[in-house]
Amino acid sequence: MKSIQKGGLPLQQGTKVRKNRVYMQCVKIFNVFARPAWSVTAIFKQFLPAALLLLNSPVHAETVFVTLEKDNALAVVDPVAGKLLKTVPIGQRPRGIVISPDKQHLYVAASDDNTIQIIDTDTLSVIGTLPSGKDPETFAINPAGDFVYVSNEDDSLVTAIDLKQRKAVKEIQVGVEPEGITVSPDDKWVASASEATNMVHWIERSKLNVFDNTLVDSRPRALTFTADSQQLWVTSEMAGTVTVIDAASRQIIKNIKLSVAGLTEDQVQPVGVMIDSKRQWAYVALGPANRVAVINAQTFEVEKYLLVGQRVWNLAFSSDQKRLYTTNGVSNDISIIDLDEHKVIKSVAVGRYPWGVAVKP
Image 1 (tube, rainbow, N blue to C red):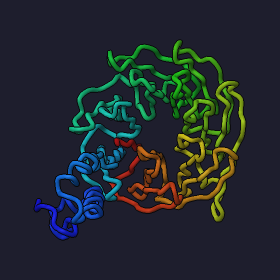
Image 2: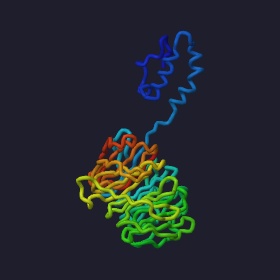
Image 3: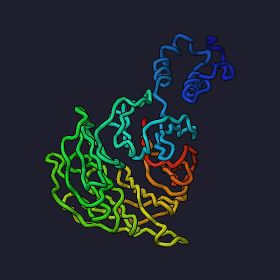
Image 4: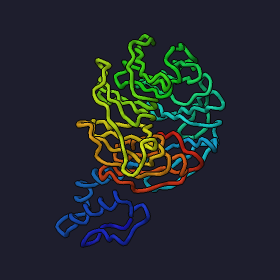
């Protein structure tokens, strides 16, 4: 780099790195203070540490991983650039996907291989498997990252797997066709939804026994806790509803009916659900309605419906919760939603039948 000249550092001199937004901020700092009254040495002593800190600050980029059910592959997406980076072959009929709390591993349900694969997030290589039982689809990991809980739909079981030992330690009998499953952030509950029984089963994580059951609407598909562990939100696909349950009493607080103008009731099929960390907004994927419902999580009122791709299945937040990613099974893409504006800003083609989605900061 040339030395500072009178009048400041020439902006036209530089490399591609200097065109970086962070670098340009540093240049502006130098230009403000690069006056004849200031010596070069004084400027650098005063501002070089701050400039270096800015230059070395992490860029808020992230990677989105999408399972492709019909391609037997994992799509890797750069959501900032809005493009598919690569597609990596993995197991047969991959669906559910979860990232470990330390972001080092992906766990993917390879349904037709009857296993959960462990994938290194840096190399994207399969480094191990877990004994998931037959035809795994959905599963959840606890906050500590040492246990995985798998829904075994055909056997009416939830299987608890010790990740350190990579072995099943208990099978828990639940209702018929368990599908949605989640762990509360306080690590107290594993909640399992049985589609045919229309019930949520409250499993004590410390004892791995069913403690209580809550009857919900027809065909519960997905569920998630609020960040404070006080509420559980459950989507019911056939009823077209979302049920909000108080975790302390396991009693229903609110039942939210979803309807989209111009669509029949049977087209509105709630599946994936996410709630932001402030419990301000909830987002629900509506399957063949091709929309995401935006719900005020304080008033339980539906504020709007966002048009996304065809047959929207599952959802994931960006690491800063500024964006929401949706997997659209029939249109073979993902939608990227700006959550400040509640506006769809991009769709990215990823491959055949995108199903699950996970995010690495």
